[in-house]
Image (tube, rainbow, N blue to C red; front, side, top):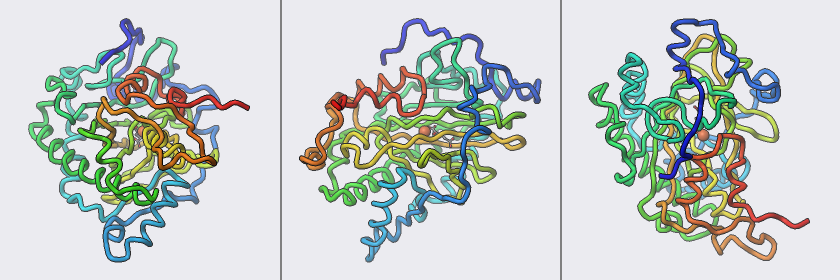
Length: 355
Ligand SMILES: O=C(O)CCC(=O)C(=O)O
Ligand SMILES: [Fe+2]
């Protein structure tokens, strides 16, 4: 992986430690400019992202649920799935080992350092300058599949069953992604296996985000607004509080956790493949004053060597191609070496429009 040679990040606090030592302090580097402060933006609590029932989708009357999935992809780019078939016990086990990892002493977690400019390990990803505002979050990010993207030195050995649980969990999430991509292809009226065949040995990575409570949730962000570079993302969140918000019609809509549901969102790669018919959607995480929050996020994307561009079936005279064709590895490199900032990274793939 090519990373910027000398990334200067300045001092990066471990938020849990900061919080432990000085619970009421919010350093200036975390205080957002006015237009990014949660307290200054419009939040709509009456809207809810759609819920898709996988059992219905794969049952006898699947077409009704498929119509709901089509609307969810088109109007939201975000939905929750229930009856997805992943055992609740496995979801719970993953949450337990993830939480246990974050509860370890700092010296233990620092055995898996995320080096500046890289994206695997424990620490702060997507920090490229000393001026950049920081997210109120500690994260552990790991490449999972294909195995050559793994850095085994960064896989925690504590808690003891962490790696084993992550393996089991990732295998189930991988097959859920493949099932979802079949149904998403169906909503587009293209051959069901289009995406799975094209993706080859698909890339799968996991990021576990731990958001400690924050004395000033009105001023900081847990995670900056961004779209994901993946094709699709699967997010498991704890049910203790709400933190994820999705941008819909210039308003932030909180995603209220449903027990054992998984949140799915369309990433940049699917936006390009569908020629913009389905859009990757900006989202962010906010913090809570007295509650911590944990999310376990799986990014599913094509193999790095796949050449990507709008699918010919979705390019018409009325919908001419809006994105260029590029190598997916090239986009991934671009994504991980850019700051998280709305949908900026997708500019890479856009064909400039002539007005
Ligand atoms: O924690 C969350 O809810 C958001 C996480 C997220 O968007 C990400 O890790 O890409
Ligand atoms: Fe995300």
